[in-house]
Length: 398
Image (cartoon, rainbow, N blue to C red; front, side):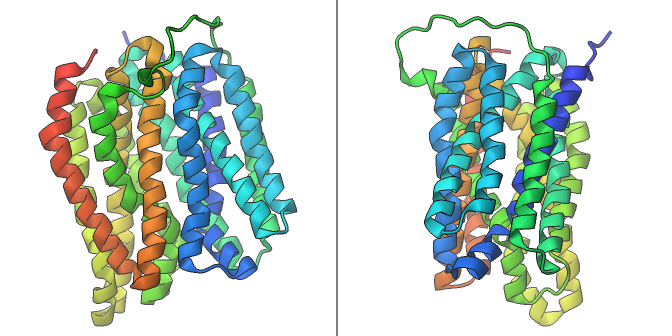
């Protein structure tokens, strides 16, 4: 008989995670326009400013994993969630670019902790035999937020809604999420004594090969989430680009439902490989859209949204499998470290994607940036199949 997955605590974590990522995704496609229209920033400077958030999250991830493995997890999680929420209020009050950048950096620090904390706590409270399925549903809340957040944000922007109202909407969502997170009951975890500090307390050494492959994969993902609306505007797609995120999220939602069950049956590396093939094809097609629209605008528009669906399915298949891969390489007392290593690798690639995407777009065009990203997915796929998969099967603990 299967252990029960949908407990009240698990349900509250789903709500908290959805609201966290709704506030996050609401601003992602809007911030490039905010920086351009409010402060007159160039594409390369936008990439640098947006990257500050990712760099901050990256700096915090290894330390947050160590802290979560050492101290009581829920209080750390709630403090990080509170700081994350407060930063939306800071955006409303910020009147200079310098202050905005400072707030964005602090926001990244909080995000780096609260996401590791949320993933670690939900792993703690779910049955281990249903971990892949549970992580799939937990990640599904992110996907639902992705489907609604960017669409709402772009809709508000396109209808001339003041940026402060958009920030207030993100603030309200985060407050609801914080209240939900505070109601989660976790088992008492006393402070434990740790051996002397060493690299493996901040980074899962056995997870480095998988982290490299994930880093390369997340570079074009970072380009897509931050610049796809500007790319569509640049090549002349007239449709509402907010629906790109909706279709991407639908693909993730559908694929996560069954991919988690495959992962629980032991098909971790096989699931990731399937996702790689689909994602690689989609990024090459996305780069090709700039040529296709010259031939047929309608066909290009349809393909643009089909690509979004394909990317969603591919990443939705891979996310729970990749998360499980890292957890399976770590002992139970290093779950936080494993999760932080997984998310750190992801953040590094997204940060590189923001910087390179903006830089390539400024000296050339966005389609060249996506072509570069597509080539990176090929390298990542080959490295995963030849190096990461054999390494995982040799070193996994469960």
